[in-house]
Structure formats: structure tokens, C-alpha cells
Amino acid sequence: MVSSSTDDDSSKKHKYIQWGSSLNATDWTHYTDPRTIIPTLLLTSTILLSVRVYRSYLRRIPEATYIRPELFRKRSLFGTVTRVGDADNFHFFHTPGGKWAGWGWLPLSRRRVPVKKLDLKNNTIHVRIAGVDAPEGAHFGKPAQPHSDEALQWLKDYILNRKVRAYIYKRDQYERVVATVWVRRWLIQRDVGKEMLKAGWATIYDAKAGAEFGAFEEEYRDVEAKAKQLKKGIWAGKAKDFESPRAYKTRTADMTTSDKVIPKTPKVSEDTTSMIGSFVQRFVIWRKNK
Image 1: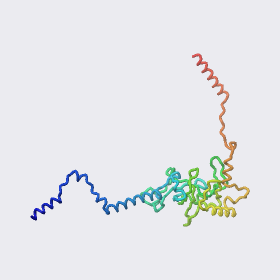
Image 2: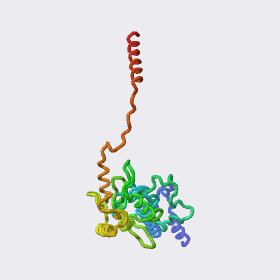
Image 3: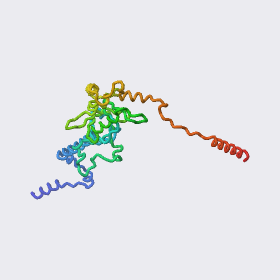
Image 4: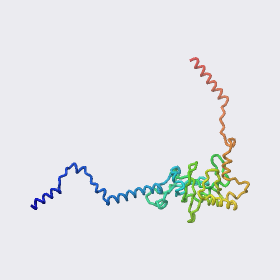
């Protein structure tokens, strides 16, 4: 009797299951197990957070046109100045994260600032220093403004090949990023625009529209007034001879065509004209007789 009951229990446990039904069955208990769900959620969250951090803070921006509008007035950009083209603007190579992200020291990586001009082409952000206007250099057929070389040299000595942080405000009509720029000098962060005004190599940007100062307009005006009082830089000459960069731009923009060199049109000699006329006349007669 005992043996018979044992056989019945064994047959119940090993109930016959068709091969097809076992093939299509899904064991959902594995997916609802906390030991599976928790690590999966943690891994997914970590990946999504890493992508967000990379896109927002660690992705390199090659040029000003790549900056998304929502980043203006909310983000700053860190990088190395590679070229100073004029006395109030420059190009810099964006190095997001700086040394913390491996720039300049991480072995076997591409996180290094290029040196060759070819490698820097289309890979730098053009920055216009906010709130200041420096003497204009010679370009577009216009002569250089007095003190433009000194102002340009000052800016080169101050920021070229140095790491700067630009607090970006907007993009101007020349596809430059208007920004307040800070550079570390003797372990102290200094506002480049303010220091330029203090040295007397720039004026306040006094355009009727489009002027951008961030939160520093009043401070900038006080610094300019002090440099003017001390006759520093561009303020060293006589007041009656002074012309601001804005006034210079306005004056040179109104240059008439008589002030510009117009290429002369080459004159055709009389002999050449008579030869052409004779050839045309013979060609017409030939066509009639044909």
C-alpha cells in the first residue's frame, strides 16, 4: 500500500507536459525578481545620467554656431586662447571639464589643445569681450586707429595661450559669442574687460543698441572714468584729438566711393577698333554672297 501511494505522488509531480507548450512558455518570475530589477534600474539610471552630464558639461563645442540658444546666460565655457585677432576679441579652444576631464595630461588620449593652424581651423570659438570697445586695427581697406597696436599687444600679453572662462550672453551678427571673460593671473581670477578698461586700452561699448555688460556696467563705467582721469593708454593725448572706437567706426562707415581706389577700365586703342570693324564688315559680305 505504501509503495502504491508513493507511485501516485511521483506521477502527479512528473505530470506529462507537451513539448510545444513548454517551448512557448515564458517564465516571468525571473523578470519580477528584485535581484534582477534593482541592478537593471541602477544601471539604466547611471547610463542616462552619464549621457546627460556629458551632453551638458563634457561635450566639446567646436564653434560658436554649435552653441544651443538655451545655454546663453546659463553656462560658462572653459578653454585655451589660441589666437587674438583684434584688441577686443579672440579665439579659444573649448576644453570642457579642464584638467578634471583629462585635458592636457591624460595619456594616450586626444584631449590636448592643437598647435597647428590646420588642426585649429573650424575648431575654435570666436569670442567678443562684453562691454568694452578697443581701437580698431587696419582692415576692410580702412586705416588703423591710433593706439590699436598697443591695445592688441596688451590683450595678447594678457590672455594668449592662457586658460580662460567665458560667461556667455548671446551670439552677435558676426557669429561671435559675446561674453564676460575671466583669466587667472597670480592665482586671482580677473575680469579681462575690466582690466583692459583699467589699463586705458579700451572704452565702454557705447553703441545705441546691442551693448552687453552682464551685471558689470556700473563697475565698468567707474573704471573707465578713473583711467581717463589718470590719462592712461588711449586717454594720454589731448582731449580735443581723442576719437572713440565707436566714433571712428561711424566716421569710416560713411566713407564715399571717391575715397576708395576704383580700378581703371583698360582703354581699347583706335587700331584695335578699326580692325574689329573691318572684320565684321567682311563677315557680313561673305554671309550675303554665300
